[in-house]
Length: 284
Image (cartoon, rainbow, N blue to C red):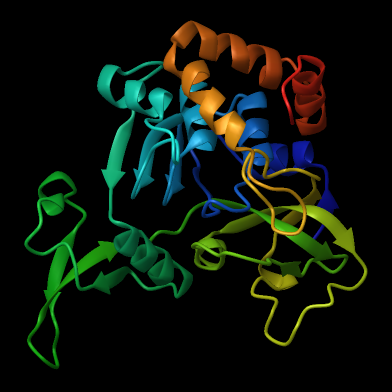
């Protein structure tokens, strides 16, 4: 399990056409990794995320994706994810296929993927309209009770990317604070990349505190601030002002494209991205 630069991690492990999951629920969203994928101009990706928000708005608007599997999309607390919406509704910058689930359905699919089972089951979907727009949602009869249960195909991303507070030099990862589907998405993946705030000699983890041991991690990159503008418990708060500002940036194609070109494509890495924002008077 090597500790590498984020540039090298993406270059070595994310290919055009891959299925890629960037997970993190409000907290520890791997923005730096998403922007590095944009910077390296990956194309044709199948993006997977329970809550595609600003990080996927940026990636989809930059032309990285052909397909999106998700369970909610938007700018949390603000409004629409305008680049995702325009890709779906108008095919700009290219058409985007969608596979829509509920949060429970996505969780069941990740759990099945982590267990290397072909599908997950849940009490849900049946009697709703979602199976009419997602043909992957099917059902089975329980062999014990005769109950009809909804099923979803397992999710096994080619690559899952997470952000966490710390990793040790052996590659064990400690996540502190709110969890979404990080553990399940990580265990379901063929490759797991993790960006962290710091690499330490000793995690100081409580018993059973390490849910991502070194043997499931493909590579680690130390990227301080790598979840900004989302938050990392114990390191920095959510930058609510940026989420509000993003609504206007993303609403217009030209303004969005200029922002991506200046701050992402026009910088060498995430540190350079944040330095340019600060130089332009944007808190980062």
